[in-house]
Image 1: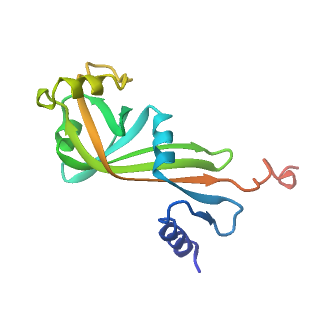
Image 2: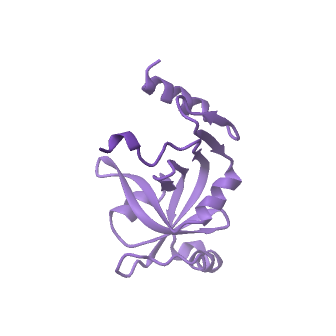
Image 3: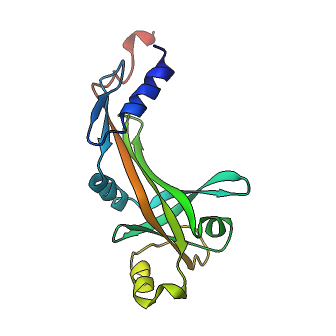
Amino acid sequence: MDPAAQADRVWAAAELHGTVIHVPNSDAELRILDADECYELLKSQQIGRLGVNAEHYPLIFPVNYGIDRGVIVIRTDEGTKLAAADHANVTFEVDAIDSHTRSGWSVLVRGLAEAVTAEFGASLIKSTHAAGVEPWAPGERGRWLRLIPHAISGRRIVPGELPPAFESAGYL
């Protein structure tokens, strides 16, 4: 079986939560993460990627975020991102990768995004602002989005035995 077909089969099988999949021709393992593990990983980071449909294309934006009782809170400004995300189904992805150990993880959230407005009520606005999202990009960034998750999934690649750092036979 060609490598692309093997990879497709591995990812299709990976939809089973809690499973460990051995990657063909490797000692590495692909672990499927449950929702609790995914949320713990989300809490460990500050930068994610928001995926929206806008201007006839899917667009991906790096964003600062926080977590408020299971809801992803994003601080942003007026523009394409806010306009495309408000009351829309969006995706949100966070990952961490270590190229030296060939390991890493990825969490994908699918859900509904809503711009936070005065209509939400004072307690929800206060809770949103208390999520502690501090933008890295310059500018006011005075608008807020809440992403209500509909589905969350995650994967972790755990390396097996790593190859040597260099092949001594390659040097004269």
